[in-house]
Length: 276
Image (tube, rainbow, N blue to C red; front, side):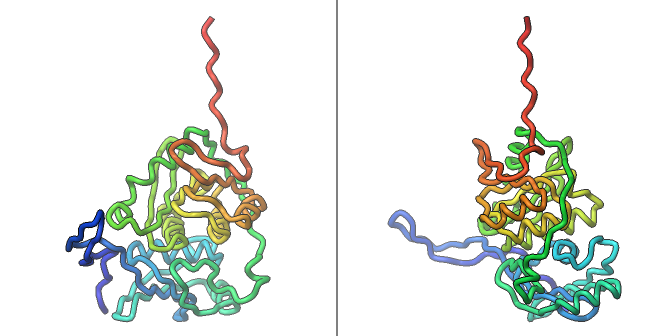
């Protein structure tokens, strides 16, 4: 068994900037084939950053609807080889039968989202209704988004990865996970929260990427009520967030953000009455 590769490495390069050239190095992120297996059978092969793989495996299992609780998952066991990394899990027989019925082993591009799906009908499975309300204000959303950049060490080093963070009122930033794939970063975060016993419905999910429909689907399956992203959503993502009851916030910048669905969860502070 080989040891896991580091999440980043220093790569020599020749730089041309401002009419000048220089030799040097740049930190770049690693991406590695990661096979997720259940009961000895490969379900998906994802290209991912080789870090936080236990979180990745548990989170993927939950956000893909394979299991509904981390307690149903035995493992993960990580086995590395020259060909890549295998993450082995064992699940209850009834879950395994469902996986076998829909399984399609695939090698996806970075962060492929619709894994194990082999029909258009399966891609449109209704999402659970999210009722969680963490009780956040406009200022809290701004604080949550502002807290993420400094908590991304791999991004600060390489400028080439996505992140997903979880922020709670009264606590602040609880967890952050990074990956070359935006879907993978969310899966890693979901796994970290599940393994720590955190309730995803009691905080804000923060994403550094655009919001595509797969991210909404994953968020709904773990009970996220409020999602805030720094980029824009797709039209389908907005429709799915609206149908699932998720408050979708996007284009979050230092000067504000835009709320696309279910704004009721985000309240403005009550203005103070002027003293008489």
